[in-house]
Image (cartoon, rainbow, N blue to C red; front, side, top):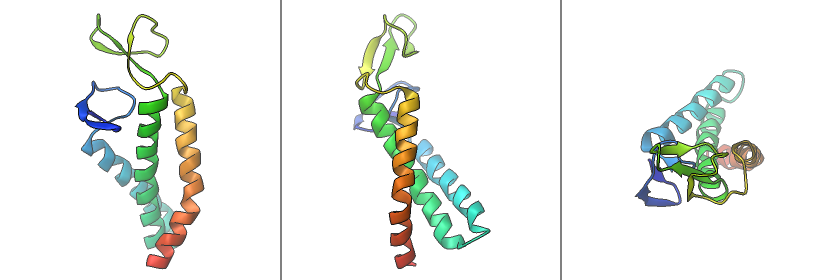
Length: 126
C-alpha cells in the first residue's frame, strides 16, 4: 500500500490511509453494486452511477481522514502495525485525534451529505 496523502511513500498493510489500486477499485465496485441493486426499484442508471461515485468518494475520504487525523502506530519489535492502545509503538503517520469509529462515522456522514448534490449533477448529465 501507499499512503494516500503521500503516494510516493510505501506503508505496511494495515496502515490508516494506506491504499492500493485494487482496494480503490473494490470500493468503487462495491458502491456500483449497491447502487445497481437499489436501481432495480428506481432509476437504474442514476443510482448505479451514484453508488459508484459515493463508493469511491467515501473510501477516499475515509483514507484521507485515517492518514491525517488517526494515528497509526508501528511496533518495531514485532515488525507490524500495532493497536491504537500500544503505547510503546511509534507513530507511523497521522495525528491521534480521531478513533477508527470516528473516522468511519465522519466519512459516512460526509458522503451521505454529498449524495444529493452528486445525484443532482448526475441527473443533469444523464
